[in-house]
Length: 196
Image 1 (cartoon, rainbow, N blue to C red):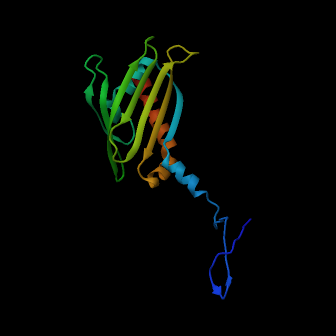
Image 2: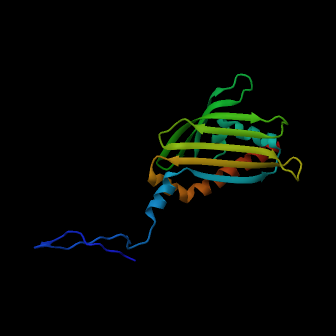
Image 3: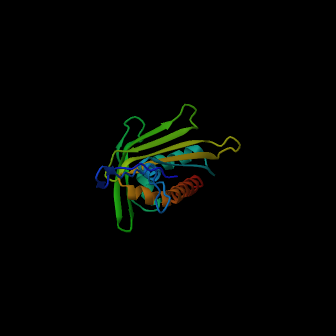
């Protein structure tokens, strides 16, 4: 429903003609403000999978960031710049990712934790490179499967937000597929190394 109030447009003597429009309707009923807010927020993808190998084996694959280029699609290079001098775990590491004309290098602060019972593991990485992303982080939680022995329950949470609204929009189309592709690559790698 439209409500109108007359505003001065023309003056004919003392008569004033006014028009006020309080409702807006577009030709296409897109809620652009809501969509823009979604594109400006952090996107989160969470996957939970069962790996047919031990939690320790999965942890070793996930924490060996310098080996990622051997098995992750589109990963051109992977590196560890700094290790914890006590545990040997990476604390500064990164990836170079490429696809067609896209080529980007990310460096991350890494936190690898082997929890007290030695069967639960967490690997977190937070990007410190902010060329393309406002935010980029991953968190792996690896625990024993409660029903099956020597089987790992793996959770991957990926959070990201591009600087560009266009990239945020396009990424929402393929990010789920890429997250599943990466999870599959880790599962395959962990199982193949566990069977050796």
